Image (cartoon, rainbow, N blue to C red; front, side, top):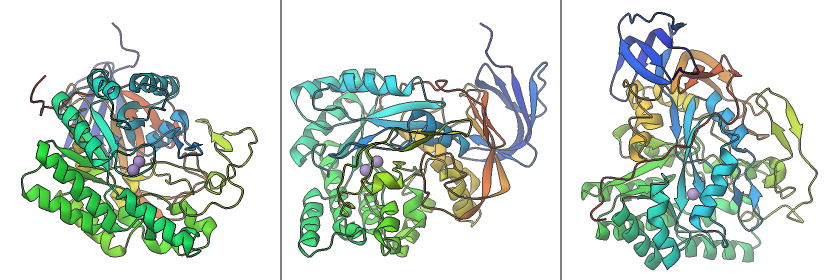
Length: 494
Ligand code: MN
Ligand code: MN
């Protein structure tokens, strides 16, 4: 069968993997990496000169929320599968893992089929899913196996949030079934009762402004929940992945369980590495941009998270990309009021009536921020250029370690022959000033507005196809493929 795309040979680049850097050519045939070596002869192949560029496995972001209806008002995150994956590609990310959250009247498999139907015609890069373990009953427990067979080998467990969270007893039953079937729990660890109590107390004191948001989500509640899920998981001897670790107190817990030999991994987001809670101390219309859970924390927490990344206690940098436009944050709309198409044009969406009568109180502001496009450049600028991370560490925590953790390795996250030719040709000297007006995320703000970063993708390939060239998206909607992920090796019985 003839390949849809010609063979490509990338010459003169500095190849970077999770373990080393070396100068080499790289040959791409039929969408796969077919050879890595010096002076590859490739008759008829299209030549790409990567002199001065880093050639790395494409970024993998295993924590994103596209077209995601959040909370009781079902406010839908402003990036859909087209705008979100185009933005990801511009930033050097070629694989994402999003979530399936079944509605009360849907089975997990029905919810998965519905999510796939949204993604398939739009996605421009490859994608997989985590399943939200949002209920524990006979029907859902029996469905675990078929969900895994469908290629979803990780399940999100929420310890907080009404309607979706599990109590400890439910968590234990869920872990039991995940272990038996070889699936990884991915956990949002916060103490639900504490959030509810503190929110109520602040409301009673008249504290409804956004500046009170972090007070309702203390690091102690995150650390307690992390300790609790790891205690439960240790009893069952099942590995756990902790989502969006934000605080030094949580790192202490991870370190303790690691030292006991427990298989715990964790992820950190650029916003928790780079921004602080001082941003909440502003008028609501500004502060609401940073409403997310866990919230931004202190500069000392930033430092501890960098340290944990350097020493490998945290292995994955992901975004928790969950954008809402400012109008959505203010309660004016459920869906975004505009849509940026890949050709750069902006489509205005239908008018809509507000879901909130007034500016929402801190606990009602949709939680989340955009970040899918800026992850690699921010981490390169603040990680590699500052000397905190080596180039292999950069590739490990943005791609390879994530592929390994989530059952995609070595098809993704690798430069080995046979791997998908998902590549970023990264210009380490290109400076870009970040702005919502020039980024491709479908959002009218970025938490990093006005920041100048050095290091930006020059060319991005997905399965051997150039999809971004010099800042232009040149792929097509729907070219992204659903990734079935492998179950885990810790299966003890079938
Ligand atoms: Mn979360
Ligand atoms: Mn999330």
